[in-house]
Image (tube, rainbow, N blue to C red; front, side):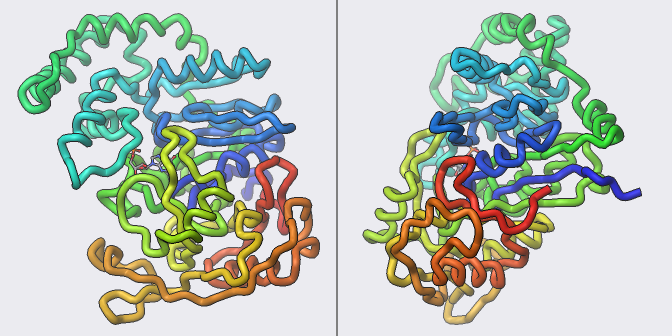
Length: 431
Ligand code: IMP
């Protein structure tokens, strides 16, 4: 039987910060559950509702839609201090957060992993990844090493203590002998974590079961990726990636929802490109165009405040994201930022060591050597922030959207023309 209202995945098609928060929020009023399935508080969603700006790092953006249940899935790594800071901040602004559910299988970012993230980066020197320093990588490493602390461990202090002891055995050696830091005591970690038990307990659930049952009842589930395709640990620009699965495949492992339940994958792609942290970025601009994109687009990290690296739209990357994720619909964001350019370059292929390459190069070395082959599209000068239908856009902006669609491997179903929820050109229905 084909489900009338299936599970829908939202993924970033570039290096993150494409505006997934706004897209999720756009659908939030029409879905019953919004699930975050990977990453942690390294993410940053900015959502603007009625002129109010909300910056979310850990909470799924569905938290802002009153009819929707926000879920933190098993694939997420959770910093409990940040979780409650964010909850308290929203509650103070009158947002009800009591619907939030947290998977018992999600892993906890312990204080020592925050420390290890920061000192590890310093230790790498010029080989650093440029992480957000939130402890994400070390916590996922613990998960894979089977040394992680899970949410459910909070409810059994004896087990929790044993697990923290196990995790600290090697880490204290590293902290003291390699990184020249002080050792961490088991008690200080356990005490901190146990301090959260009463607040955590009411939100903890078997979220995989609950979501399965919800789908069975015909509810709509939106799975919201943190980070993006090119930051995925398998499919991104490794090693300059995050440590989780940020593509649509990760939506299944990170939530417990089966692949056969997912019928729609929405890729969020910016009308130009940005990246934070280190790693290859063929269309990156080092001139005043880059500076103008950064200023016009407000391209500064939501989580770390770092200026984002900016460049032109890269169609091979969008095609790659379409393929890896099985994108059915793109949402093209921030088109308004391009207003005012006479000609807009779009990368259509790469030159890799003198050879034209039309797709993402197979090797990291190839991608590092890739220089963009550009086509130039006509720009526009009109203010497009009031456009709500494709026909409202100047002809050259319509051509820009259509050309990107032809190059990028899936239809463009919505176009963002400003930060507000309503500042969207709707082309096809997203649900
Ligand atoms: P980590 O996720 O903190 O380990 O950082 C690894 C890489 O992913 C770094 O280049 C970060 O800048 C990048 N990154 C992590 N989260 C985000 C995000 O939400 N948007 C954009 N880049 C991110």
